Image (tube, rainbow over all chains, first blue to last red; front, side, top):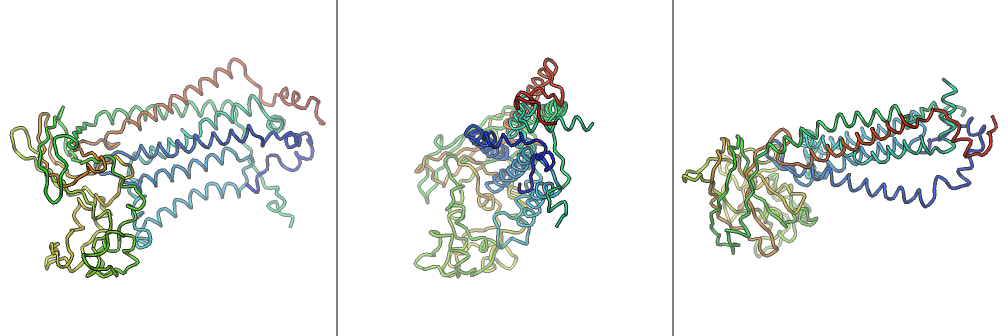
Length: 182
Length: 321
């Protein structure tokens, strides 16, 4: 986020009217704030309830998953969802951004597998083998796939509507410049 | 000091959501999620599940140490193909309560003797052997200690056909293999020369922790209504009436708990869970609706990429290009 730029240096210098959005508080006001708040509410409801109910039933083996597997599914769905939400929000994809975004998901997965391996059997017996069991369950994968989609489709649709039909100056300008380049 | 990184002049990709990409994404989503939803729902519908509550019901709430004996009639609507899974279900039972979950000693459960006080301190209040104060040794501490082990479910069941013949079933494979292989072993003093568990009150050997029924109980459930796999029937269960003879030693009336038995088959998706199919269908349909909506808007009143109309409206001027 530190490295994110909505427009690069040259464009910012050339089009000072872009700074009007700062003066007018268009990017951070009560409406925007409550927008994010309600978005967060929806996100948290879906990220919790969908994985939880998907993992409630028995596995194909007849066995039940228990609390730790449910929690692992919720948490994994959460990590993926917030990463994708971030991806929707980022303006400029530089290599550090790619690294931090996808890298953090990879780090999470690596940590999860290590933490639940025999290495940590003494320190963290409750998590032992839980992710491995999850990986073998269709319900787990189905939860991981649908939760980000179900959570973020309003964000995605809204971003599309906003940038295409109610664009900010910055959006319109960027689009125009892109067209000229072609 | 003048590197692209330091001057924040890194090459950046700045994506723009064009109608083409967004509409396609939504339709692809619909094309993927709707079939999955249908398949998941069909699989869930294929599961045959028979549930029958026995408390409150035909069984009285037992007052330990006496058990309450009762017989339950269940009807299987159509032939259930092997393997058929037999569960008991408890309601209003919070195995997910934080203090309950903590109340166990994994070191003891793995078969270590005299594990030391720090490994059993979470077991409080199920910790001290009668008239003793626990100090980590098995002479003074309950092994396995803790609320979870102490509250193990102990109703027993027998399944009989209408003709009176007992159905054979076993508990092999009801617990997680990783639990059976790594996390549950009896301590040496509770074993005989062949390695089998020996019940011995003097030594405090009262629970065979390798018993899969016990291991299943120790894997705490996440919700207050939960079922636990108890037995597996390896042959088909034909349609008809069956009797479940229950020797109930587990009182739940005090906290308005309920007890039931369940017979169920599974499919590729597991046991009965319509929710999975429904969620996929809902998301798939929403994707389709949004895709269609945006497509319609785009066909009826399209906006050319780079349309400066919006830009001019906002600046009220021609910019300075």
